[in-house]
Structure formats: C-alpha cells, structure tokens
Length: 134
Image (cartoon, rainbow, N blue to C red; front, side, top):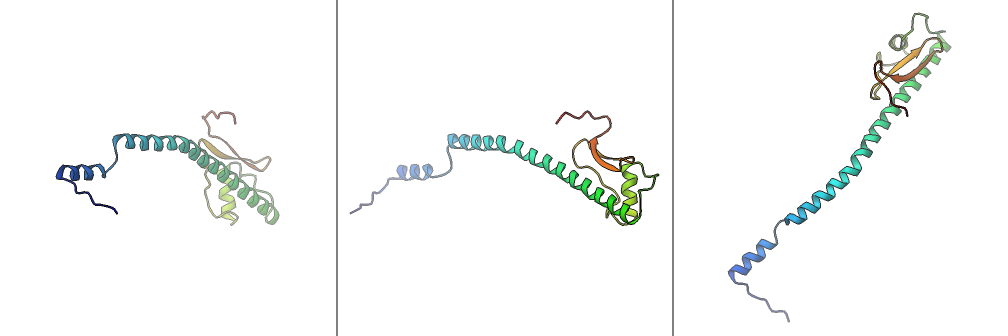
C-alpha cells in the first residue's frame, strides 16, 4: 500500500515554495490574453455606444414629430413665429405635448434642426463641424 515519504527540511521548504503564486511566464501569458481580449472588445463597445446614441436621437425625432401631429390635429398649424428647433420644443412643451422644455442630440457633433416650411425635424452636423460621409 502507499508509504509516506518523509521530507527533510530543505525538501519541505522547496515543496512549499513551488506551490505558491504564478511564475513570471504565466503572468505574461495572462496579461497578453487579457490585452488581446481588450483589443477586440473595446472597438465593439465604442460602436455599440455610438449606435445607441444614433437610435436615441432617431427616437427623439419620432417623439417630436408625433407631438407636432397632435398639435396640428388639436390646435392647428404650428405658429409662424416658430422657426427654430428650440422654439418648436418650447412651444410643444408649453401646450403639454412634450414633457421636457429642452431636447439635445446625444450623437457626437450633431444637432436637431427644424425646417418650418416643411414642418420636419432632422439631425444635422453641428455648425462648423465637417461630417464624414456615412
């Protein structure tokens, strides 16, 4: 059956030292694996954030356009004095069709604009910012 082997002092110390911690090589490999995973994940995460910002802005446009339609149905045309997006939001908020009195675009370097002749809200590049083609 199994016999227990007695270790002398040096062997016992060596066995204890070998059972603790990681070697330098193991640490380097672990850091390299983590670095590779981060290099793959970070660009994907940035794309997800940018995509969610664009979708948020599109949802806000739909909410505002729905508020315009309600305004037209219940009150009539948007007043002629409303020519900017901020004036539009203020008017829709004043009569209760929008909860917030201010709506800002969350997409980087974009602003909401209002075309009073077509009664349309859109997302455009901020003034002075050159937008890359999509």
